Image 1: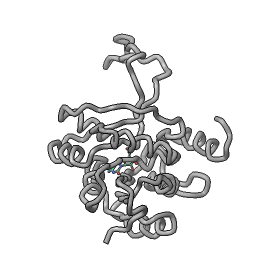
Image 2: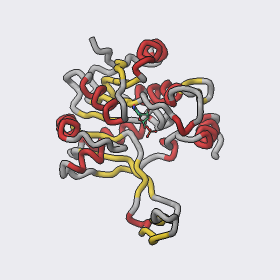
Image 3: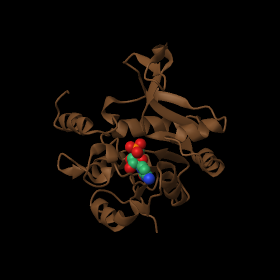
Length: 232
Ligand code: C5P
């Protein structure tokens, strides 16, 4: 039996949360690190569950933590928890396999983007509903970007105007994501990359600054400030 949020919703959200979080330093799986006294995963799931189109949430947890994560999320929202895989793509595939019939829009959302607001979930879902096979939230790149050679010397400066930083949730028509996962075993860092390899156009919607990826101890400080209502 898969727990449901809004039975009239058409969206299933997959939350890969099985990473070790090595770049955050010692302290266990990243999704279970505390932000404002609660695990990142709790923040992420609470915001996803607040989006009205969401019917189902499937979390891929570290295999040894499936029971603990199930207990942790029970008071937050009805979720299905599955064991994650060796890399992000395997974790997403495991979660995708657990999505029941009824949700034709699938969003994939990293637990590490714990403060992504429900409005972002809705805007990505709406863009898929409007007819796009694949949708990503993006922000302009503000830094100057250079390509560096193996010897550490600059090879050139990249034209920043055409670059975008990509966030999650990323949204897909269900059949498109399933086909992309079935076709590829390359470990990519996002799901849109898999879909691109199938030749499927990927549309963009505006991202959100609160959807920052919490990767380093500095990011945690920024996220704590956001959470307490301060502008960092
Ligand atoms: O490693 P990275 O920070 O890019 O991970 C992005 C997301 O993928 C995180 O939410 C992490 O928990 C998840 N992940 C996963 N299974 C893995 C590795 C990463 O679910 N084996």
